[in-house]
Image (tube, one colour):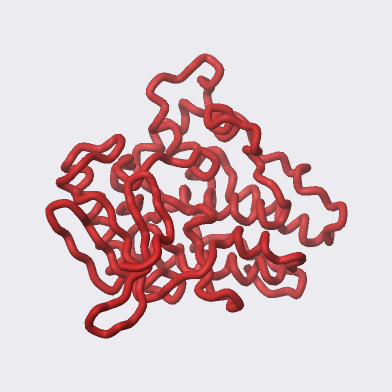
Length: 295
């Protein structure tokens, strides 16, 4: 084992070296499904979540998905080994750049769409599409990998909450947030929430579309449509469940009007409050960047 790369609530990711081949790799270490405890999960749910993560990674190999090398399960740890070392997440890359173009954004989003379309074709939902789970492979290359399948589910299965920690409200689809709302306050209880409640039971591709839409919005507009630094988790949750993404937030000032129009069309497909009104990735309307290439 080498340097620690990331530490979550219930898992640790470290750089490692294969003792047999001396090749560099990444290892994700999480508590064994039969050891310790994960929030919102019974031992059976933890076991199922770990197996689905392994199954998803095994069956969904793709050029834009982190490549699984091996998996090991012991009495106190569950380890997943991945072939490549990764450099930085999508927001770290764009923040580091002084300027960037719509074409660069489109190039990255196309890769995420390709990975998610393949995952869905294989019968799975990623379940946690957010910036830290989209990683660049090197400092200079623009090749990205989708990582962290700790919340992956079979499409149509019950949307459980056994994963690698608490959900991040600012990146979670409304129908999934509703699952964590045990007691709905008067301020949150409305018809749209009630309509979505039944639909939140089953894992669906449209929840991944929500995460992709948020990443795209943030890269184009420069801010999050439902959260800022001063908002509490409860306020973010309320914003996601109650507010619509205002198209006027993405101003045409300093932007090409054609880009704004295309983006607003994408917003309507990605941020529909009703999950089943969002587009799937196979029916995603082509949004073209300034040079005419589809995203």
